[in-house]
Each structure stands twice: as structure tokens, then as C-alpha cells.
Image (cartoon, rainbow, N blue to C red; front, side, top):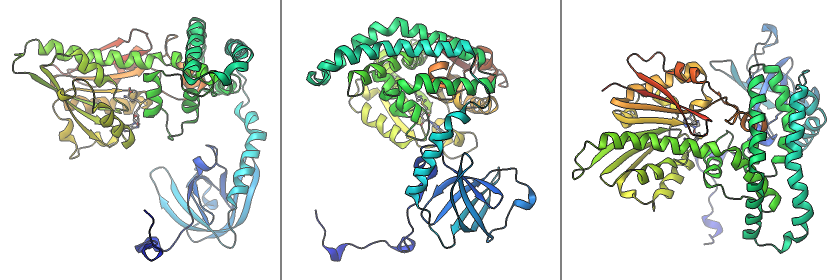
Length: 486
Ligand SMILES: C[S@@+](CC[C@H](N)C(=O)[O-])C[C@H]1O[C@@H](n2cnc3c(N)ncnc32)[C@H](O)[C@@H]1O
């Protein structure tokens, strides 16, 4: 309903003093913001408005280069050594942080022309970006030949789509396009799986040589990624519009496996991505099997007329698709108290809305905490939500944690399960049957691809725990199972 002018109020309180909009630098500059210099001090640009900029100090600086709050000096924005902007500025504030300092700058008598800076930053990146990406090391010849073969494999299909489907595409309904894309991806499946396995083998062999890995990734992005990102799933994995990899929408692409996109080309490329991420489904199904089996083995002893409840918690729950399989695999006298933990409120909302009509919903009592897994590491009032769980599981989260943090995290989860209970951790492996090439090399989705020994090492400091590691049927995921003796 339209409002009358006399009821339009503007802002109240501090908001009355209007400040021009601040943009996140990573978003404004497509993930590659310019550097900010204040005289000789170097900063990483975090946010920017037409009037000022917020930055993180890039250490270590020489002591005499560091200026005090209130100091005035020359502010420059540079990309690949090219000046994009120069003007006088004041260091308005400095806040020390654990790793350095954050600083705010105000321009003294000029304004950032954001449109011009964004344009010149993009131009500087386009001119110099590729040369820098090489880092002085080139990808091995065998790997470059492999990427060329992979691109030729995909290009062969795209060429045939353009030649034979292109001329009739405008007359096809979306369903007909889906259908053709599905037939093409089924036809491509065996050959594409062979490409993926070879990519995984070559990627794993060079993974721990950092300079070589960077060069191989840069080469892959130019030759293979470039082609695949026309498919919506590859694009979302590569560009990460949520600001982090593995958001619940990406995960849902993997679970739903629909031919996303408008054209047959896009749909076909998307479906190649679904073949590459088959392990997402296999991981979820294996996890659901482990949880259902736990309940079935213990529930078999329970009196079916009374019913039995199990408490489970998922950390980094995302879309929590395993709940469907858990309900489907367990009989009506088994009920579940499930706690979902995720930093992303939209993911939790999605789960509540999706399960509303799910079969067996009456056997599921759901609660959710919109917190970080880090909040579980220290004592807090949330802890009672996950005390005495039968199972605490985390699938697709520990993959992002360094070994020390992973150990700390799993040890803490172990404290929260009851005697007889389990902690279950799903983590990508480094095998040729896994996902190291499409994730790390094609879509720049960085993870800890762990060996079986590295999985066991996560639980090595938990006294008395019964530790085992199993694989999913595709041999792409390790599951660490840490059981607390009853
Ligand atoms: C790769 S997804 C896996 C989702 C789900 N477990 C699955 O297997 O489908 C990772 C999830 O972890 C969540 N996440 C990322 N950082 C987190 C944090 N610090 N605390 C809690 N959740 C986090 C993300 O929001 C995302 O939903």
C-alpha cells in the first residue's frame, strides 16, 4: 500500500547522520581488490565507500613505516604495480587485532570514484593477471597434456551440441532440452569418469609441492575451468557467490542432480559437474546408513511398543539431506531428536521448510543453532543442546580444518556424546576415485584431502576411544568413527 509523504520518516537515532554506502572490497572488485598503501605502509583493502576505506594491515612492516592514528599521508590504490588512485588521506583509526591491526582511512579533500577504480582494477587484472598466476613455475608437461585432453573431451561434445542441437534449440521446450542434456551426459559418463580419475591421480601426485600446485591450478583454470563454468554448478563452485565454498545451494545442486541452466550446453556442462560430485550423494547415504545402523542395532533390543528416541547433532549441517534417509531406514518405533548447527541461517530455514512435509516427520524433533562450530570449543550455555548425544556428526566441515583444529574439534565433540555414543566425521580423501582434481584444481575449492592415517590422527589424543575409519562405496570419502565405550 502506498504511504503518504507525511508518514515517510527517514532514519532515527545515529542513522540520521547519513553515511555513503560501504562496499565489501572482495565483492566490489570481483575477488581481487587493489592493495592500499598509506605512504610506505601496505594494507589489504576490506571495504570502501566514496569517502573512506577500511583495511587490514599487511605485516610485517618496518617500524619507521608505521604511522600513528591521526597521521596524514599519501593514500594509493594499486593493482599489479599500477596506480589506480592517489590522494591525500588521514589515518582515522587503528584497532589492534590478534594477528596485526585494522585501520580506517578518510580522504581529506577528494573522493573515491568507485566506478573508475573498479574499471581500472579490472583492466589491470585482465592485462597482468595471467602472467602473475604462473608464479615463475610452469605446470608439468604431462599435466598440461592431460588438461588439453580433458578440454578436447568436453569440447567434442560442445561442438556436436552446437552443430546438431543449436539449429533446432529455439524450438525445444525446457523439458526436451533437459532430456537431451541427460542423454549426452549419460553417453559421456564413462569417458568423463576416466578423465576425473586421471586428473585426481596427477593432482594428488603434485599436491604437496606448493609452487607446482599453484601453477597447475592456474593452468587448469585457463584451459578447463574456463570451459566448464558455463554450467551453473561449476560456476557456483568456482565463483562462490555466498563468499565461501560449499554453501547449501551448491550442496543441493549435488543432491538434486537436475539439469540446471537454460541451454543444452549449460545443462550438459552442469551434469558433468554432477558426475564429478557423485561422492556428495554417496557421502550422505553412507552417513545416513551409519546413523540408522546405530539406531537399528541398539533399537532392536528396545521394546517396540514403548518406542525409543535417539539424540543426534549435525555440525555444519547445510541442507541436512541425510534426515530423509535416516527416517526412511528406521521403523516407526524409532524417533529422533536432531540438532542442526550451521553458521548460515538460510540453510537452517531451508531445512525447516523442506522437512515440513517429509514422510515420518512426526518421528523427528528438530532444533537448530545458528552458531559457529568454534562456539562448541569453549564452555557456553549452548552446550546443553548437544550434551549426551547418541551421535554427533559432521560431514564436509572438518575438510576445512587444519590438523590441530580438527583434533581439538573432534575431542570436544567426543566429550558431548554419551557412553556408547559416537562421533562421525566425513572427510574427502586424496584417492584417484575422489574429488581432488574437480574441487581443488578445477574450481579452486581448497580442502584438506586426508589419507586414512591422517583421519586416524585426528582422534589420536582421545584416551579410551575406539577409533575406526571406513570408506564410502565410491572410495572418495573417509569416515572417522570415534566411539565412547559404554
Ligand atoms: C560443505 S557444506 C556440508 C553440508 C552438509 N553437512 C552436507 O554434507 O550436505 C559445509 C557447511 O558448513 C557450514 N559452515 C561453514 N563454516 C561453518 C562454521 N564456522 N560453523 C558452522 N557451520 C559452518 C556451511 O554453512 C555449510 O552449510
